[in-house]
Each structure stands twice: as C-alpha cells, then as structure tokens.
Image (cartoon, rainbow over all chains, first blue to last red; front, side):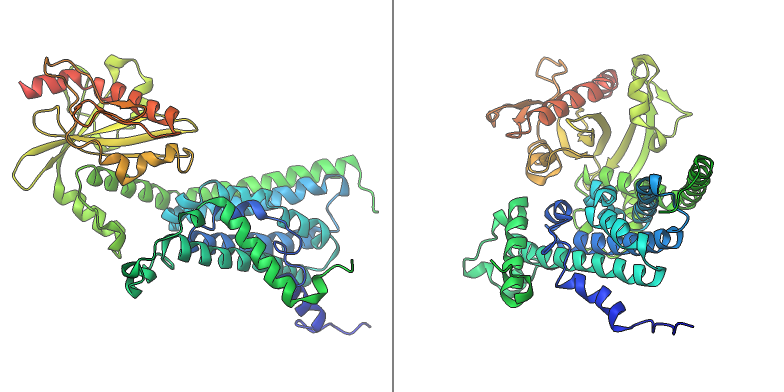
Length: 215
Length: 241
C-alpha cells in the first residue's frame, strides 16, 4: 500500500510557493493583466478583488478536481466555465449585499473574473489532472500570486497618485504637501499600472536569476 | 482518454445546470433584502446630498444609521403628483420607480417630490431625474428653491459612463456649476439648463460647461433634465404663483 503523502509535503508547499515567485501568473506568465490595470487605482478595491479571486479560484479548482473523472472531455471547457461563472456570481451577490460601495467601484470587474485567464488556465492545466488537496493549494497559490502583485501595484498607485493609503491621507498628515509636493495624476491612469508591473518584473528578474533566459 | 456516451453528456449537463440554477436562485433570494436595503440607503443619501446634507458621509462609521437619521430629520415630507400638478394621495413617493414612470404615456406618470426645510425655514423641493447616458443609465436629483426656478443643488450619478470623460458628471466640480442656475427664463418660459460646448458664459443663468470629451453624456444629461423637469412644469407654475 502506498504511503499517504503528508498534507504539507515539500511538493505541496511548492504548489503554494511557486506562483508567488518563480511562476507568478502576472509577472512571469503575464496573464490576467487586464484587471491588474483597471482596479489598482486604490488599495481597497484591489484587496477585495484579490480576495474574491482567491475564493473563486480555490473553490473552482477543488470542484473541478473532484469531478475530474466524471467530466466528459468533450464538454470540459463548458463545465469549467459553468463552475467559475457560478462562483463569480456568488461572490458578486455577496459583495452587493455586504460591501456595496466596493462592489460599485469594482463594477464589471467582478464579473470579468470569469474571463480571467489565470483561473481557466489552472483548471485546465492542473485541476483536471490532480487530486483535490493539491488543486486547492494550487488555486490558493496562483490566486495569491495574482493578488500580491495587484496589491503592490495598488499600493504605489494610491500612494503616489492620491497621496493616501487605504483612503487614509498619509501624505497630508505627514505634511508633505506643505513643502510643495504634488500628487502625480499620471499614476491614476491605466498606463502607469502597466509601467508599475514592468518595474516589478524588472526587480524580480534582477533578484531571481532562474527567470533569465539563456540567450 | 475515457470516452463518454452522448446520453451521459446530456444527463451530466442537465444535472449540472439544474444544480447551479437552484443554488444561484436560492442565494439570490437570501441576499435580496440586504441588497435592497443598500439601494434604499443609496437613494436616501443621493436625496440628502442634492440639498447639501451629508457631505461628511465619508467620515461616518455607521453609514446606514447616519443616512436613515439624517433622512428622517431633514426630508420632512414627500408626495407624488401627476403632470397636471394634482396630488396623487395613494402613491408613496419614495417607492416610485421613475424609469417605469417615464416609460408610461405622459398623463399617467406619477412624479415624486421630496421636501426639505432649510435652516431659514424655507422649503426646498427635490426632484428625481432619470435618463440614458452613453453606455447605460444616468440619474440624479435636482433641488429647487421656493421660487421654483432657482436651482439649490444638484447631484448626478451614472452606472457605466467612461471614466475621466462622461463619468465626470458625478464629480463635485461639475455639480457645483448648477446651484444658482434658473430653469425658467424671465418671461416665465421653461428653458431647463443647457450644457455648452467650449464653456458657458458664467452670467448665463440657463447654461453650464459641458464636459470635454464627454459630449454624449453631457447632452444626455441636458435631455434628462429637460424631460424630467418638463413633467413638473405645471406643478412649478401653480406653486410659484
């Protein structure tokens, strides 16, 4: 009889750890960029979207992994989409009921989680071929890898663009405006999200030699 | 790869769809009261903001209670009228769905009016607006002074206008243009307030600046005011005489 693998074996832990760095969905695989540009003007919506994606991804991965042997391959994409869409609608309904302001700010982007390539990608590439527990970890890992970048980008964009952190007027309280500092309006516009992501990729590659191609 | 029969695929999809549908409708039903409460609070807040109350809402901890209290205290009465200006006693103003009313033929419409009494004891009349923007609905509230022509305050909101362009209608700088403008000219003719491309003459009491790059939304807003306030024309005239 095969020995049971411990819940947090190195292999399983790597499922969580890898997407945070070596195979980060945004900075290495460059997936899910669209929402990273749109919602990262302020920290609060970014954190809410990150949590929503973690929830959707973890649950969808587990559901698909549980069903993986009974899903007919010919309609597997439809089944995956149905599971994701159901989860997204649930998240959207819950936000509308309990976090109305944030849900209005995120508006269409909650719905657009459905089209987030990271989720479909993980369902197709991982959950269809693995047991529920590793699939769960993989889902959490990848969604967290996505969320972390979202939050880093939002942190800088909110700080430099509006001078606030989580709507707390940090720069105003520190008295930086009185010595002539002005908010950088460009940070609020979508192109700066792309440039911020670019800088994050640069920093990551400078520190992580594994990511640099041979040539 | 394991192969599945067509029957299996049909059964699988049917069961899946039925399960999902049951789950989603159950959740939607359970959450509906919370969602409706949020929408009601937002409507009350919009009404309050159109007369300049609740500006400090962002600093308030428990928004719902604050809005409910401010609404009950400040909005002293509300009623619905028909386009002839006659009172419709059986209609509750707050519950009127303006979008549905505007779809009716003009003589059947129920038109809500909310009344706020300011510090000097003057009655301010708050009227809802509803229209179509570029990408989706736009709406707002206009408050008028007792003379029924001078605008006291205005707020606008939108569902999905373009950020930075049409979406500017819900910003302070845009809405701040409205107070003091007049919707009737000196001869007593209903003119509403126009949006002017390239900047309005500051002395013109019937015009405000349009939003650069947001022409369609600006024009939609002008049409919305013209249509919605136009419904009240008879009411305004009888009230101001």
